[in-house]
Image (cartoon, rainbow, N blue to C red; front, side):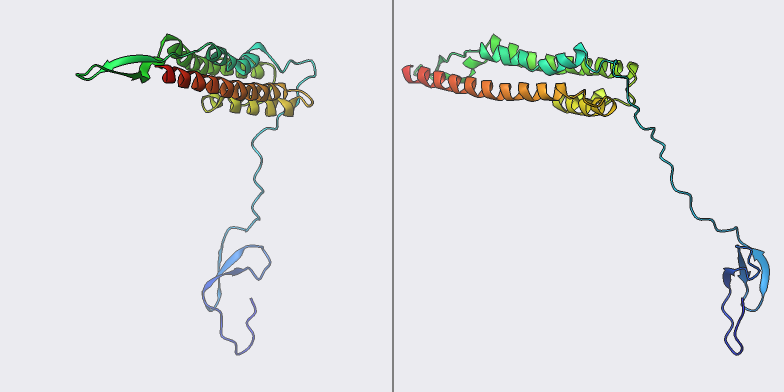
Length: 209
């Protein structure tokens, strides 16, 4: 480090070695001390530790009975709903023996069967999602969409699974998504029609009681 004449000397600190070693040398305010710091190197770029997913063979199947059963499971409670026809009943209350409509009359055995079927289908979906995930791993799919996502939503698992399969098997893998969309639309339409029919039937029953 060269200090111009009559210029104040810089304060103590680390400065580039005037000998050109590439290191920093300690300047005590009046002279070099010979004390060097470690050489400064630019930080190396971080390496991508996640291995990319490789494509699988065109002969490797990307569909199996597990994923198709997951897609079709919502149809089971839907079919039971179509056969559920609640009937209003009367009950007697009060000292005057007044008869009123019993709101609990809709909670019949078919109703509880319908509710139970929904919970069973949820549990079965989790088991099938695990089996599907394990099958994809054995077929060579790197890091398939994890089966535990099915606990948040059956549809979420189907979509995530299909996206990753489509990534490793271009032009294949998206059929379950389209089938799921079809099942959702069918469920919405038929459920709406059934609920309208049930509401109309209950209204007519209430008017005649």
